[in-house]
Image (cartoon, rainbow, N blue to C red):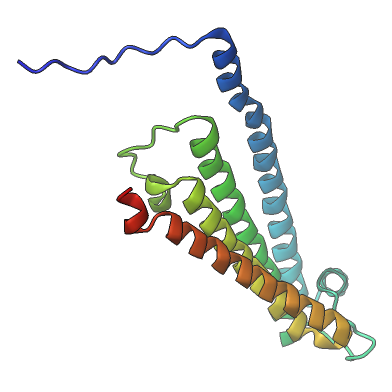
Length: 201
């Protein structure tokens, strides 16, 4: 007859228990990120409402959008909502969504990895990526998300290139390349650490 493994909880020493419980100090940080995401949701809807109002000829909403996206109306005469402003606003909305996705990954993945299990196994709404999340996977996913956000910012800059100096365009491009190289380095390091040869040891 096979003996069942002992499922009793191991009693920790007071110091070890205190150190282990210190992980809950991160909880207010994740709650703060949830509030930050709520601010992003509010900002998203404000921008979307302004875009809809400007599409119906509201000049005040158009002025707000122009200031929001950094469109230089002095160099390019503005008579109404044009394609460039629409693209800049839509890219800004996409940027908000991508940052929100990044926040979700940090909040859910970080809490699951560093604080406590969420016990979402077999839950119909469990994110696919959460089933195999760990610190390494989280780093790679965060790096990929940051590259996506940087790409949106760079695209917005090039669409509205008249409002930026050549130096600003160059620096944004170099920063984006730096993000790419950093993400590649993280992915390569993670692959080396989890290569089959490494796992055999």
